[in-house]
Image (cartoon, rainbow, N blue to C red; front, side, top):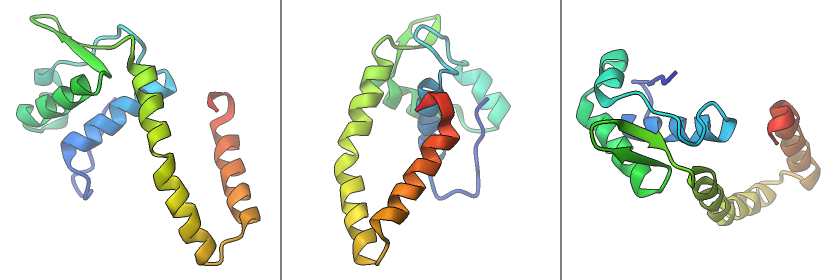
Amino acid sequence: MFQIDIMSRIPVYEQLIRQTEKFILLGVLKEGDKLPSVRQLSAELSINPNTIQKAFTELDRRGIIFSVNGRGNFVSDKAMKALEVSRRSAFSDIKDQIKDFALAGISRAELHEYIDEIYDEMGDKA
């Protein structure tokens, strides 16, 4: 399920965080689902267990997952709401990027076309 790109500039723990969030947004992981254990992921991905624990700790801090001592980590019932809030706060970054696109000569029509293409690819998920 999880895949790590060792050539990426994105730290491994951040790749795990992003993939977990994406799996939740896509419905692959749902409220109450148990995540693979730190030990299991460490063996499957051949990465240090501390790296996985760092990702899980951050996901827990964000309210995406919660841990139960001796049982593991689970998707929180507040995960979708937390992700929605997080994504909406990114709108200001997107607004700045759109301004940069406009300054670079990219037209409104081109942006609309690109956005429509993305939503079309997403199908029912959007």
